[in-house]
Image 1: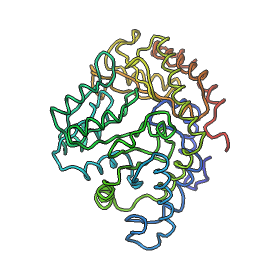
Image 2: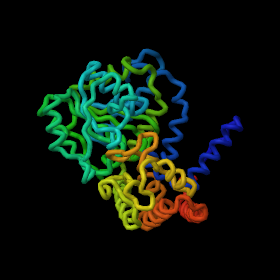
Image 3: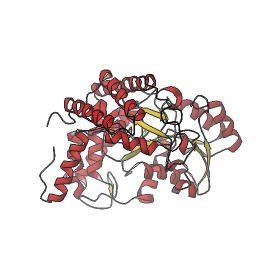
Image 4: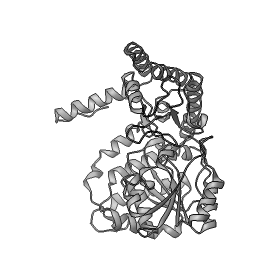
Length: 417
């Protein structure tokens, strides 16, 4: 799996990272394992070429072949998501969101999005982000009792504030999103509708979650996470926004695109068009349901009491064996010592702070890629609960670590190599 590299220090680090991934359970919902084909394209000779501009309209010579690769990525993305226009050049999710703001808005314009601690993203108006500094954000959240979106409240807030852009799509919301409802609200108040589907793009591609198309004006997404492509992004939109979006990406924000990564996206899109990817997307959700059910049976409290997608959010304040704010990082470290890798996360109405959050965020995409199914996820749920309930017990963590290693040996990341 690891190519031979003459730089021995980097070679050693790459090998160690492969072993870390192989011998632990990756439960961070934004991480996954790209296929060997995607990895190969990401490190290919296409990295040698500058290609400022767009296919057929480059500023440098020598892009005849590069153009074909980028067109392939565009056409495959259109087919996969049913989009009218696709720009595959954004380097990552935050620049993709920035490009949308640049294309449609002026600094200071009003945007509606979800609060960070309720599941929104930094680029959706956090005061420490460019978005919160350059634009006026009005934030909605989830219902305190149910942990769910209240569309009537969101409509009322939109009528009151009259934003120019309304964003749906989140980084820590474990339930289905009604994209049509958001678009209806946007149309009612004369706003653009935007969906950031970075977390659920693979579920949408695999027909396991409703799509924002054909309703939503503009859709941004990363191309890794549930989509299993390279670490990058793209923007999809209705044709009427195509020119503005393309100009915002280049020359507005970027110079030469990373064509090796774009080729890797094309491969990932082709993989996602296959019937087995639909099975994979459905299995992600089946696994998440079993994991959530097992955790709750083991006394772990979940935000919204379950999940509809790939993601689960644990409320440690309401979990009796922890029952105090700000313990997310401590518990996440304890779980990692047991070979269970997830991340500390804020919960709705966070009683502590983003630096010392009171929740844990976990998901099933990566373990599903490894081939694990419901029986394995039930075992994982029991192991997670055991560590949470005994997070100061070294013997328990060592016992769980051995159980994790046994499970990892049965499900290698790249069994074909």
